[in-house]
Length: 242
Length: 58
Image (cartoon, rainbow over all chains, first blue to last red; front, side):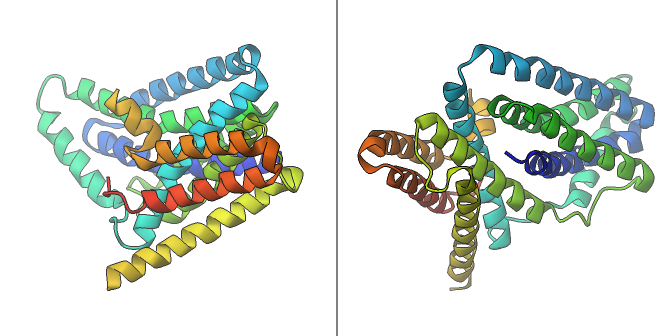
């Protein structure tokens, strides 16, 4: 399995989640200061790193490969369905696009309500911590599942996630405002296709299925999901226009 | 439990069911159909995706 594809998938997935987390962290920094925002962020990143470091190697060591491929494949298919469905709905205009500016304003308003209270700093810390932890948890699970399915993949998966995290943090510190121009839906679509494709391939391996082109069948699977999902976008657009 | 379900399946009813059907059918047919069972598996997964997009938007 190509490590760059794994790194690219975790890069996009974590980039997207971190963009959403950055909006929350920026709102905390705006109302409670950077120190509180970064403290909450660093604690959450530490917890996520611990999850990956402990769960990844433990799964590989204690669970048989075929069973592991089946279970993680099924999980990746379910995650992929969720990402891809949302992207299809958004491309078809059935679901509103993510508006980071609006989310930022809402978070700031909520934090302002606690600003005068004595526990304002604590709430700011908790908001940043929860935001980064919850947005990053799915990425951590994806990295762990990639790691479990493929020896060496943990390094590629972690590298992709860390690169995206570093990029988002640097951009957030430099810009100091929410990311309004990131193509979130396109990124979500690509992540959905990749998770669904890897999940299909690995769960099929776990089920003992024979692929018609060996490992190259993964490319066929990607192509089939792209064609199917684009057809679904067209169907939903037509339905909405009728 | 509800939040775990939302985290794993995005509150979809059809995707876990479709995935289970695809896995059981493909596994049952793998010795009889050879690599065609993989085609059946992918086909059922794509149909599941299609059906799930007609669910109520979460």
